Image 1 (cartoon, one colour):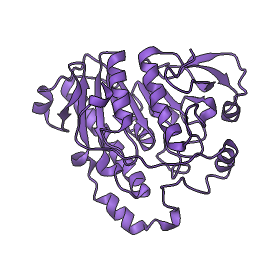
Image 2: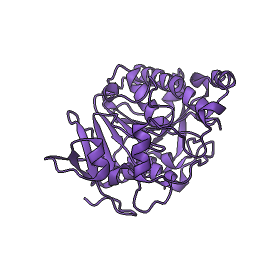
Image 3: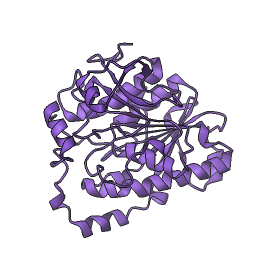
Image 4: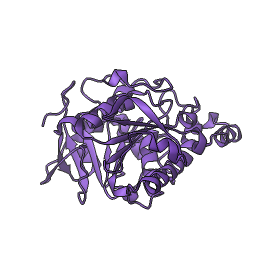
Length: 331
């Protein structure tokens, strides 16, 4: 079913080779002195030109909201901020939980992130799935322009959710927001602008470049329960913990079955999708992210990674191992 999901734009991929764990730890401690292949170095960023490009992006009019439900699992229905008439013609129901999906850099609604997660979500539960196509902001070949657009897009998505709740009677407690890479940070921005009242926010390998000292990076208090899954920690993905709960499968880098950074980075949403369908992925508690990255975790306690239901009240850092291919979970 994933391959049949239809919408308006095609995605592109953008990353290449993976660095060793030693490099990851050095990068993390040195606050990342270099950027991954495909992202221009900071000195090549023409600030005025890039800010001007970012200023041309208007998320209130350019973000596109695609609704999928079990009644329309493969062909989306459009939602438009402020258009209650259009909303009334869709299959959206405030009696279901709503999951909002936020893609990353150079992606769109047709990205693997969406085509993998949408059918998994609809298989796991009868929910409203809203895929946000913010490719008008994320689609710049200049990574730093896309970073600049991440914040206004998140604020705009929060406005959209507020309007949707007012129009339908839905509440923030019925929402799950899931974002990948730049979308991982944007998920937190959305939750923050809704007063931290979203029930469940998941950041899937949130982006590292340009986010270490960024004031709007993902925060643990962005939602009632916040969870982060690190799969390319220290390269494309953020190195240190950001959520109430942070999982480091396979140490957070070098995923079994992968041989490049892009594959590692993408594994986060493949693991999430499998957790929505079948559960699995039991993590062991760690003393720190350093012990999580080396797999030296022997503290009492375990927790399931991902899944449909927020683990409200839980906190900590967890390690687990996966298989090289599906099923990825070892239980």
